[in-house]
Image (cartoon, rainbow, N blue to C red; front, side):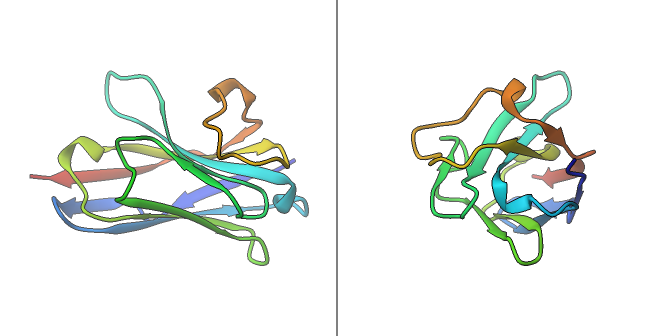
Length: 128
């Protein structure tokens, strides 16, 4: 079992930055690929970024590439998402998720149903 708790969301002006964190419980955090997803009002949950179990590979949605950086610290059981140059269209609830997978993630994002555990989400609001 893995429990995930996100934090770090808030209100920021366009062009600003936020850093999200996702604290994971359980002793096998390093066996999971970790992803960030987001869901805006009235829209489906969408992929943002994913990082492999070791941190050695990452993959980003085109909409955030070059602005967001995903990272992890397996010693602290924590996942991060550094978000820079934020835009109003980044406004959403952001979720972290864990997928039991020890391969590379460079080839792309796995579908949502392949993720085993989800956090409760943290709100990010970007004002124009």
